[in-house]
Length: 121
Image 1 (spheres, rainbow, N blue to C red):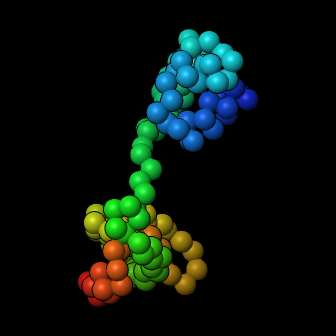
Image 2: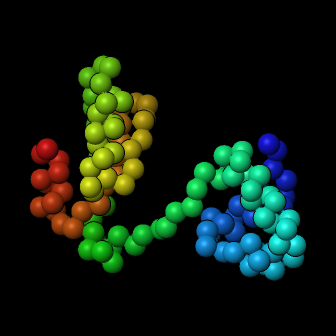
């Protein structure tokens, strides 16, 4: 599917606020609600829009410390290790990278002690 300017406008607005209704989007973009609904449905079917999510303020939940951690794995174990890491409570994101390390993860912690315990596991 090739996106046109209208699709891009819809996507940009949904990135800012995924809770906008089709009616609100239509009013904001000067289009009909049917046009918005049709385009969103098509982008969902094409998996351009994979889902909708909430953006969480981790600091308000007490997670004031963000750590970016490099992981070095044994050959052939990367996928298995990444899956294990992704399931850990503090982990927000896991990335395959090129360079010296194999994986980089982003994790949130309430304090340095929590980070220290995490790194030692």
